[in-house]
Amino acid sequence: MMKLDEIQRRLLLEVADLHEIPEGAYNIRSNSQSAGRQSTANIEITSKQEVSGLEVRIKPGTKRESVHIPVVMTESGLKEVVYNDFFVGADADVVIVAGCGIDNCGNQDSQHDGIHRFYLEKGAKVRYVEKHYGSGDGSGKRILNPGTEVYMAEDSYMEMEMVQIKGVDDTVRTTTAELAAGAKLVVRERLMTHGDQNAVSTYVVTLNGENASADVVSRSVARDHSYQKFDAKIIGNAACSGHTECDSIIMDQGRILAVPGLEANHVDASLFHEAAIGKIAGEQLIKLMTLGLTEAEAEEQIINGFLR
Image 1 (cartoon, rainbow, N blue to C red):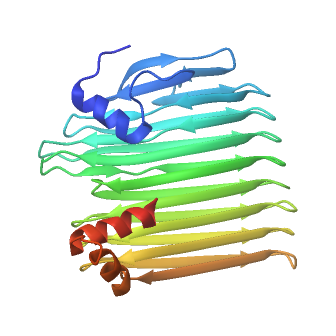
Image 2 (cartoon, one colour; image 1 turned 90 degrees about the vertical axis):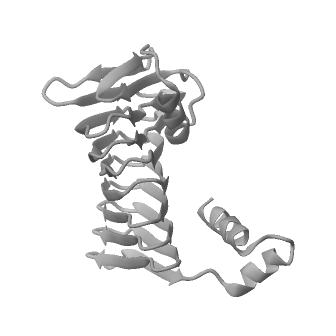
């Protein structure tokens, strides 16, 4: 295990909640190098040969195990593209924790593009957590462009927690999913932008099998002069159910564009969308300020509760 400095350890804590080396399978990537790796009897992690990245193979029936694959970057000007593939065996039930933290104190842009592909076999269950975080006082940008592809076999289940709360200057987040009969996808995105940051989130979920379902929900806050776009489309090709929702708070001179999309190609496809954008309600602020909080403190309390 490569020794990590204080900044790298702080980034690991932010993006993967790691105070120390995790139990189970893991691969820690630091400044484009492997800082440590461990496989288990049921989870094998190997390096790709043709491109930078990993193959993670989870045996059928694996239960109550986890995989951690965090990335930290502290070198200004470093740019990388990483391809990670996950093969989840039938009836497995696992947690996969990813995420990237960039600390940029220089004047060159730093960028990590992580392409993750998930192949879930019949009855497999995955909880996937992806957190992005940026810090550093340099003029160089912190850029993160995650791409996620999900292929779900019959009766599989995937829950995705996608979080970006602080410090990322530019991000384009693209997620596609294809679901077979009885498969279920649940997405919970939490996003905050500030300063002049830009964030674009695109989801395209295709429900191909009978009783497939998807629930894609984004909660976001746009502060200062930042810009956000949430573009979510659910395609129903069978007797299925789908829901997409964008719930956003806009502040200062922030801008938000919500583009919900539904495409029904079957008479029994049941699809719904919701979108709401608005400022913090004045009565909420007043109520908290009567308890002794300043206006700024009251705003922070409301935002923290909203994004929880």
